[in-house]
Image (cartoon, rainbow, N blue to C red; front, side, top):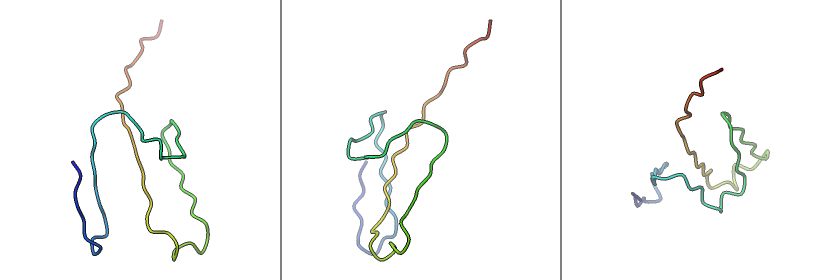
Length: 64
């Protein structure tokens, strides 16, 4: 579901079911942490930050 927003709205949410990460996300990784580095003095040039997260249930493997 995609929502339309006006310029006065400060946040926007879109949920698309599935496990596909769009290729325009240039920095991709697998793991349980996230680090975002923003260059200093970039507040006037940054319009926003886009994050894509996919969660999956991990099955437990029984140990021998």
